[in-house]
Amino acid sequence: MAEASSTQGGFGAWLLDPKRRGALLVAPALTILFVMNIFPLLWSFGLSFFNYKASSQRTPKFKGLDNYADVLTDEKVWERFQTTAVIVASSVLLQLIVGFLLALLFAKAFPLRRIVLMLVLTPMMLSFVSVGVFFKLFYEPTFGIVSYVLNFFTTEKFVMLATPAGAIAGIVIADAWMWSPFVMLLVLAGLVSVPKYLYEAAEIDRASKWRTFWTITFPYIKSLLLLAVLFRTIETFKLFDIVYIITEGGPGSSTETIAVYLYRTGFQFFKTSQSSALAYIVLFIVIVLTNLYLYAVNRREAEVS
Amino acid sequence: MARKYREIGKAGWGYTAITTVVGLIYFFPVLWIILTAFKTRTDALAVPPKLFFTPTFDNFVSVFYRSSITTGTSQATDMALYFFNSIFIAGVSVTAALIVGTLAAYAFSRYPLRGNDTYLFIILTTRMLPPIVVIIPIFLMFRLSGLAGSYWGIILLYTAFNIPFSVWLVKSFFDELNPEIEDAARMDGASERRVFFRFCIPQILAGLSATFVFGLILTWNEFLFALLLTGVETRTVPVAMARTMGGEVGVDYGLLAAIVTLFLIPIFFVTFLLQNQLLRGVTFGTVKK
Image (cartoon, rainbow over all chains, first blue to last red; front, side, top):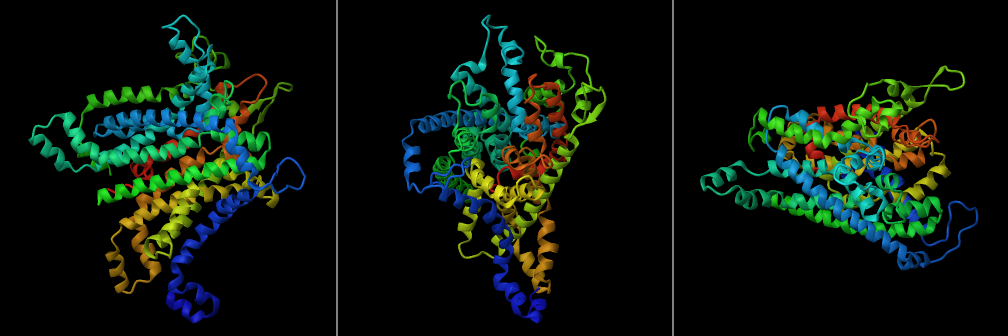
């Protein structure tokens, strides 16, 4: 490459200079990211200081930090953050438990493992729309299978989505069902990283299963679990489609997550600037979480090597 | 990868039976969706819910052909186009992101720039962003530039959506390679291009396929961007699914289930074929051993 370019001279040679090879290879990726992600982000950052409405033709007026002040003092916003926190915490906890148990089950090699594993992995491949629609059907008081099964135990008609707690449970179950396999894959990755000789040593020492787990297995999967928690937290934080389809934020606004609220402010009420300001607050939280994620990753790397 | 599992312990057919039962319980909602696809409208909403029924293929037919109430003739729906759109858009953008991402990953791994880690951090942040944060300006940008509703627009956006993940994952695979082999090749007079294509790429093919499959799962099912940014001609299946629910007679669950079932098949087989590699995909390549 270098030899060929030196004969051309001019701009081509300058561009292909080995010194610039790194920059050249990175350029296409960064260009696309800049155009499709960073530029829109800067744009909305600008919008967040005006009173722009995507639905009206009026020239937007500069409002300074007013939008931020409005959003931060709005009680509704804090309620939405609380709802999001409750959903994220319970869903991630459930995913951890189910994913962990599934991983223990699938850590062994057994005949037809590849096929049986597909049964568990499939929920991850469904679209949010289909999970949302069919879980809504499952919860339906008349036709739904959940209510049908529960009616064996109680004579009262069971309406899952009628109460705030039930609606939150409904969303959490659907989301956790979909993403527990993901946690399972992570934990499996941790389980296979435990050196075999440690188990052999434990066997020679006649250590109990419980003790073997806590002293050998757990330390190896500890940081992976942390990683799973953070990654799933960041992802569940964005939860939109399932909530929007199953409950539409209801009953009342009891299941309206911050992502649904953002969507409503921006696309139903067309308060573009205000939703941009809120989006920036969300972005700040995401950056903090991403930093924690990287911290967990680095710790994992330090432990493995 | 597969061999490593065997070290944890081997089990026989009895264990297969246990895991199959657990697997089927977990799979039950999917099974129910698939069964619903074979039900008539009455069976789909039967009280109590029916597990056994006479199967019908009508739903699968009406995914692609709808009989007109007035004339009685059947008319092709646009669903075939939407399936094509989904495959085309996801296929092209995941591949494009993989190529662009691999080049960048190679640079980040072998020719670190000044501020390498900062770039990587910014790239990761863009992936962690809730799409809702950037969607307003993207929506405005697409409307102004005329990209809204075109293949170009949505492909470009999905490519951007997949790049961060491709860069991070593929970089970790490059990091794992032994640079001494590359140096030896260079000593033998191999050009940089040859080192990259003949020595590095073949060694990480498994990793590249993991990146591909994981990107595909995420892009395949993406809804929000597709809802706001595709037009009649470029609509993807998840958006079309959502639109089948809007009738005045309520959701046609049989029809919807048939679409979901058909839509699941391609991604199911890709995942099945590349299952072993997927394990690395979920950790963004951060788990190496």
